[in-house]
Length: 108
Image (cartoon, rainbow, N blue to C red):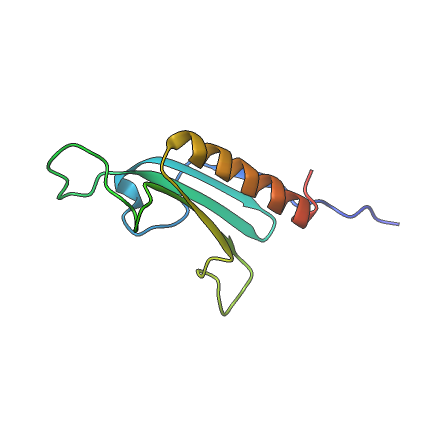
């Protein structure tokens, strides 16, 4: 009997979502099997003249979105997400999503 291979966990060095992510100073990006977990924040768009980070969306400076990489219809529609106001909470939120989806995917 063959052993079932568990999905690998890959931590990537670039942002996993957001069209202007190159202007984010914070990003975490993890793939686990079919799932992509991407957290971004600390956003400085080109028109940021006051030197302060800008919201990525309404009321959030950081966000995590989870994508199903194997879904043909909804590949870039998030299947889970959360928003944060601080870097610490963004780190913790990303770690929480990684733990949840690693368990769901059967990863080590």
